[in-house]
Image (tube, helix red, strand yellow):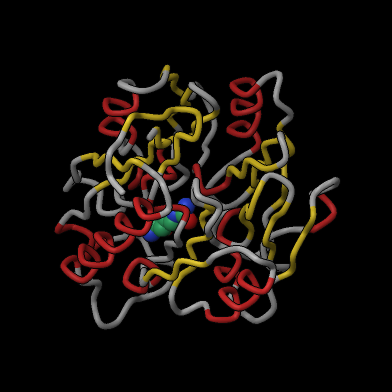
Length: 262
Ligand code: CIR
């Protein structure tokens, strides 16, 4: 059977030095992150992706958050210029692998993290955040043309997708800390209750099931009650480094390979 491709990036020993919004104690554990990463990959595969790995880059502690390094639209990819200086250069290794699958371009100006880019309902929503600026979003709009890019001021989350993600082509899961719900005209918007915006960060899998962080039990119940099969996965070590589920993979939904994996 044919399966769409997802890329993940291995966890470096330097993971202990990830950028974090607040001090992390006890320190981050690369080995625990690697175990959880393996579970994440297994869940992507169980849900229908063919998963390929990009080698870790020790000079970039956050490299496993591969989603931030590129935006893939159809069969083209834009390597981003990440907003945090320590993350610049992550795109080199990612671009080398991506170019085997899609046409790769580079941003010419501005900053953009892939975590600020949400594709839903035939449009591209682009967060204006502490990491992604107006010039970066304009570069994205040029890259995506003729697909509409909707700039979205991000409220209190690291990235737009830290608090909003797609359940299917018509539906987004949304937490009010991320942005105004009014931007999602024409889409069904499901509000996630509670204090943690990351509860709205899920990954939809090719078989229609939804990957949910194991500790987000309210989200799991909400999504299950709507009729979606739920796949819980433990990513708590990545959450301590401000990462969610979407940021651990780059999904190439328009690129598929023949795969015999069950
Ligand atoms: C950072 O601060 O850049 C990383 N520690 C976490 C990035 C998470 N990425 C994402 O939500 N797309």
